[in-house]
Length: 202
Length: 202
DNA sequence: AAAAATACTGAACAGTGTTCAATAAAAAAA
DNA sequence: TTTTTTTATTGAACACTGTTCAGTATTTTT
Image 1 (cartoon, chains in turn red, blue, cyan, orange):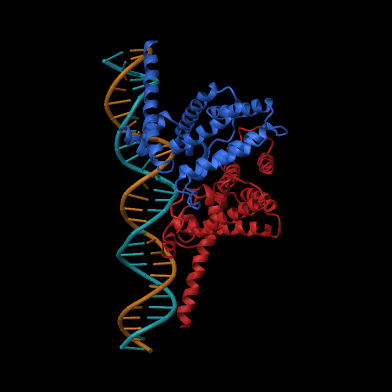
Image 2: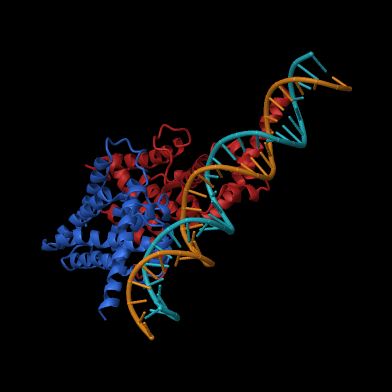
């Protein structure tokens, strides 16, 4: 079955070609400003063919959604060498914020775009659950070392993600102008530092 | 000049009529799913006439944006009777979260939709600045009573808003499914409680 | 009564996501 | 090798979008 094998590989290549074009346009223009015709012309094909390889725009979105999470997780896993879970947690927040700053459009796709899919059992959503588990286990490790006692680890993890996400979300949606800080970088860095100082008191 | 006066009043009424229709459709279907034709048919007019009273869709958006903030501020001002600024701050967060839950679409408009206008000097953006000042002055009051010492009030205010906004943003964009909590309400309430407990330690 | 200003309509333009008949190319069957 | 079947691609079409604008009816001013 050498032919069907090659066929499958070619199909996979076309899928990847579309995805590459889509990534470029998506991350350049954002979700709403990206049209199927844009993507198609980026790779010099007609718009119709995309529907032969993907169900709809939403499926392409989910593929990039997955990409974003695996990129973020890769950057977070670098911190696994840190032995102290609290240090890992604090550095993780900083990495998370930096990821949002450097990959604003990925971040939008991952956390701020209207999600067509709701249930986390869905394929492709798995990796988001993985990221949450990563956070959750760090919190539990901290608790084993005596930190964050009397806190429910689930709710506490949610709170930590919320605090960090809030910083990134205000940044990504340009809601920082009301603060008289010089730059966004400064505001985010010092804002996160405030949060860390709170965590350290517990 | 009784006629031009009446004319102006009629024009104002039409503006309000469009705004009422727009609010209904906007808050029912969200920003992207609302079309000018939807709004027009809601009030039984042609789509074209909207452009006689409003510059574009964005201007209508900003009008509702303003409405949302004044509604939120009204709810927050109820807490002005609380003498202790820290109690006011904590209750303020709870009111903020409740506002997001009860006015998901207003919240989206206010904090999560792509903003066409960037500079806070713009008319209509004023009220957002007012809300931030409200938070900022509460923090400073707390500091005068000995809380949150050695923290910069500007960055600390940003951090508080971020933490609360993060909770609401995850909720509004359906990013809570990865947590195994029973309901969103429970997750948000206990998540915020965790944050409050952190604040109380400082 | 004539002219001017105002409020509104509906058609049009260029764009969107998506579908689908036609077609070209390649693989399988004869 | 020729014919049939399968597969990949196109481009036109459909129903939608925000926005513009020539025309029209109504009302105010001259």
